[in-house]
Structure formats: C-alpha cells, structure tokens
Length: 519
Image (cartoon, rainbow, N blue to C red):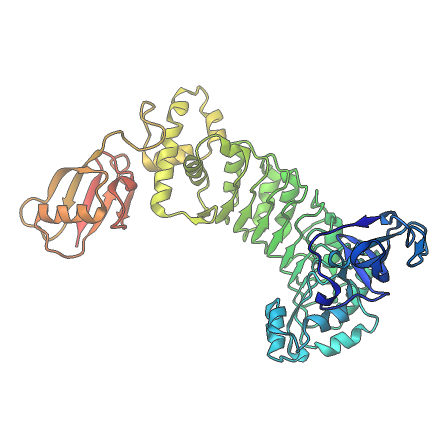
C-alpha cells in the first residue's frame, strides 16, 4: 500500500540520508527502516518501514511478485516517501546533531545553535533545547552526556518520543545539584512507577520549574512526581486529565514552596477542588483556563483555610462555565488577589464588554488589573458609581434587603461611599444626557476678589482647556494648578483631576460637585 506525496525532496536534497536500520517517525507512528531505494512502477526514493504497531502496516515488504525486504510480523510494513519520514535519535545523537560546531548559518534554528556557531564549548552550555528532535531513548552511557555538559541547568525535551521515566531520572541525577528546569511536555511517557518515585525522592533539590503538558496524567501522578523535587516553585501541567486536587494537607512538603500552578485545559469542575490549594502557603498564581468550573463558592470552613493563602495575587478562570455574578463576588474573599482574567464565561453575556468590566471592578475591591489592563483610580470610582446606579431600581423595589445584599455584598458599602442613586436615574452609560455639567468652583489661595463661582462646563472640554478657562475667570497667573473634586453626594469623597488630556466627561462629574483650585 503506497502513500503518494507531491513536491517531496529527492535523496540528493536530504541533509541526513536514511540508512537501513534507522528508526523513523511518520506523524505519531514509529518504525524501523528495512529498505531504501526505488520501487518499480513508482517514481522517487522510497523507504520500506516495519512499524512498531503492526496494525499500521499494509503489507510484508513486497510489491507484486517482487520482495524488497522481509518483516518479523506479517503485514506490518509500508512504503513511505522519504520526505514524509523523520529520522529519530537517541539523546546523544540529537545533542551532537543540534550543537555541532560546524553548523552552517542556514541551519541555525535556536539561540543555542548560534552559540555553538560561536564555538561555545559543550562544557559551557547551561541551557540545552532538544525539543522536536524525535528522541526515543536515553543512551545507556548517559554519564558521557553529563560529563560533556557539566554546567547544565535547563533541559528541554518536549515533543519527543520518550516513553519511560526510569532512564530520564538516571540522566537527571548527573545534574542533581544543578538542574533548575525541565520540560518533558507531549512525550508518550508512561506514569512513573512507585519504585522509581521512591528511589529518587528528594533527589533534585535545586529544581525550581517543571513543565509536563499534554501527558494525560491525573493529579495523583503529579503529586507523586513532586516528591522528587521538594523545592519546586513553578509547576506547569496544562492539557492533562486533572479532575481533582486531593491529597494536599498542611503537612504536605513536596509542594509547600509552590508559587505558580498552571492547570490550563484540565478537567476540574468543582470549586471545592480549587479550595484544596488553600494549604499551599506561598501560592501566588493559579491558571484554571479552559476547565469545567460552573460556579465559585467558599463555604464557611473554606474561608478559614484561605487565611493560609495570603499570597494568591493572580488568578485566571477564563473559558469556563461560570454563569452567575454571585460567583464573581465570592472572589472578594481572596483579599490578596490583585490580578484577574475571566474572559469567555457565560456570565459575561449579560451586558456589553465595557459594562461587564465595570461590574467586575465594583464587585472586587482588591483587584488592580483586569484582563491584563491596569485599573486606574478614576476608573474604579466610575465603575462603582455606575454599579450603584445600575442596580438602584432593584434595590429600591426589593422587599427583603438581605436577599439583595446576598447577591450584591458590597452594594451598601458603595452607597455609603458615593451616595444613594435615585431609581429614576439612568442605570448605565453617561451619567447625564446633558452635554454640560454645572459645577461649583472654589479658588482656595492667592485670589483677590471673587473666590467662588458656579460654572457650566461642556463635557467634551479637556481638563487642560478648563484649567485655562478657570485661570482667566479668577485672574490666576499662568502657573501649574491642581484641581480637586469633592462629591456633592458624599463630601468625604474627593479625588484629583490628573490627566490634562482627558475630557471632563471622563471624570463622571455631576451637577453640584465642587472643584477646588490650588497653585
């Protein structure tokens, strides 16, 4: 059975020609080359491959009456165009091929290759990137590799064909006191055995970061592996099969130094599982993007646990199934939380994007950055004012205030801060339909004559132009002036107008607010 491909390179264009006995990969299938050459009736150069998985094969090495090669298992072979196959290596072969000092500029593929072009010796390499090199095995004489690269700190072996932990762990012991980071993502690695984990427990004491994406492991496997690197700070395990986070306790030592945990695209559906992470005292970042969360709720007992999580500053819950605003308000119980990402959740279908942002800001008092964008003081004030107005009618109509407060825990606090809003007022968009705002302006120093006036200001005027207008009104010399606003609703609320290029409408000023001028 043949697989025909157009525009395939011929044998003369191959940098590393195939030989009988080579190991090759086609997509995710691996096999041994049994024949290299022409096939009667078909143009080009062909490889006869006997597959490790016999069901991948179509014949036993013959075409018509001619036998080109033999196989150990009937019908386990195929003919493949050379351009479709990729030669696979042992670790040592891949290392020598990528870091050969005679590499030509046209073959440079990474910063490490450029370093080797400058004849940086193997002995000076601290970072080795052998991702996508079709590595299937670790050489038995792995000690030679360690001797060749004694200064190694970072080893990236992602997207290869490694299947066993045992040989890898033996290799890692050669750098046990130096290795800081490993990446083994997207290898067909079988889970480690208990014997392997026990043998290497607490061995890699300097390991700080481990990346194990796309291995289809459960939490029990990562928890078991963590006993080998007790000082780990960053654990990145996206695209796996994690559905629970059990087995953690205050006495857990293998993950007690964890700062960052990336669980993107796993299978966590209950917030109760996330609460289990409350026992990790140093955790600053959790990525839960693309899981199956439907709600967020901290039970009374879990709130107590949160006191053990004082450093959680960043959280990503994007692309889940969270549908209620009450779940967002629950995050206010994470008092250290400063950065939140939560895009692509059903709850955000309620309003337009800008209004959603305002509601989130108003509901969460501690966050300083939302969806990667800083929350300025003025934006927070505007968001809180809009939030009070948005739900003013609901608050006025509800019979039992306790029920409303349960849905809007901070509403009374925000009313006290900014003043109550009449139900008849607009609940979203601009603060007033008028293009003007009527303000009381007070000059507090150095002015002869009039010190207070009422002024009607168009909202599209910039702060810079309003300053010039008020300087003329009060006869203030051309010197820098500061303008502080005092709310007419709550005299205890005041803030500085600090962006000369912003329009007055940007500041959400209301009729009756007081401007105080100082210079």
